[in-house]
Length: 184
Image 1 (cartoon, rainbow, N blue to C red):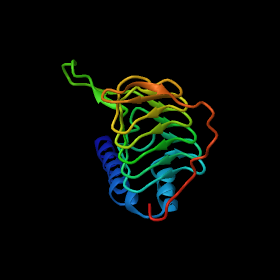
Image 2: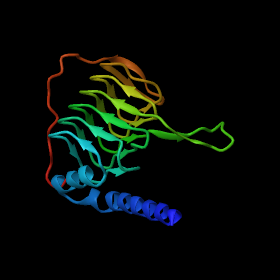
Image 3: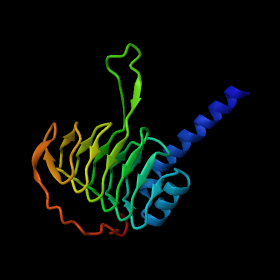
């Protein structure tokens, strides 16, 4: 009986994720998507924040988004290791944020989970990739197409593969990212 319960629970979990990634994420209504994400995926999403259409998730739970943050279309957010996104964060289209990988040197290719934190006012450019265990400081900018393999300090601008320091960003940030687009 116990094995049956495990299989049933696993099936329901996978079904929820499938529905989320292939149906819910394509509904052109912020209200419906956010309701599903909060109630059925157990994501903690702050007031004024948006997740645009086509975003994919690797698991339920483990995702926290602050107030007035925007996740643009077709992003992949992996929250298996825990993903915290602060207030007024802008994540551009097609960004990938990973919190899990494998230990390539382990005989059993063991999986590992490492949390990712993106602090307030950070801006992640289109098609950037953030690897497991990375902390992105307040106001940091990750340029489009960058692959982040090391922590990014507050107000740093980084670019490239792997991402390297370019310059410092203005530290007087007071904007709010609470925008939504119809049918997005």
